[in-house]
Length: 267
Image (cartoon, rainbow, N blue to C red; front, top):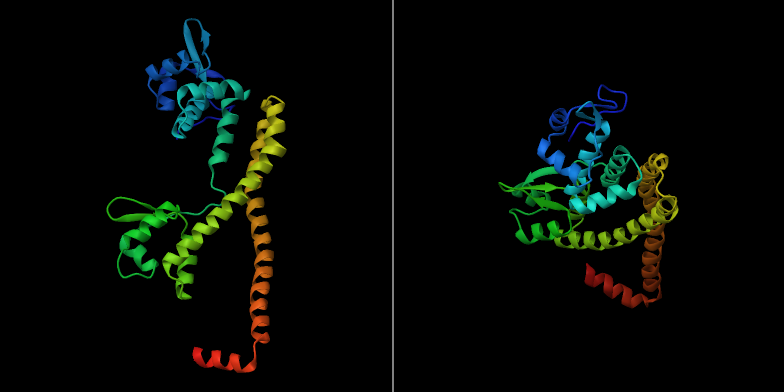
């Protein structure tokens, strides 16, 4: 990642030549000039016959690079930058906050054999691997390895296996939970858009408001997780009580002789 020097450091203001900017940013002089001609980079500060660049140019190059990695073409990036009304540093900080995972969890690299053991199998199962990949649980790598994106989720799968739940069933549960989670995530995203982003956008996205918008997004992460967990715990208690209670009531309404025959068959 390109080093973005903060204001007040040695390159605060405009103190780099285009060759120095190229070295600091990892971009060729030719590409820097091409970005300028497309309107993607601000013009340098000209002193004498030399153009000088500063931290804003470094931040803008890094922002362009990250937006390209997200699939934006250069024309789309140009239009986006024209409409931000903010420094590249603020937009870069916001886009990075946008892409950060809501909860930090380090992926784990396993061999296919280790993954099979994690799933309670003696050897790798290609169908399970494909299913896990579609659900975003694992990502195949080279040399017979896989990346487990959520070890915590896989640990839960192991616990389910100990309870007698087959991995195919566990992955089906993950698929159902993922659909429910998407609905919850969209609820929080819509809340952010309505309460924070849309008023900010209507105000013309003033530069001084970017830090507040970014901070709100960052605070939404733990709040969303805590709220979801609290609501789930309440709902789970209600559903378990309702489900088991209904079964017990149904059992109590049956004649004693029928209950005895059912217990005998089970034994």
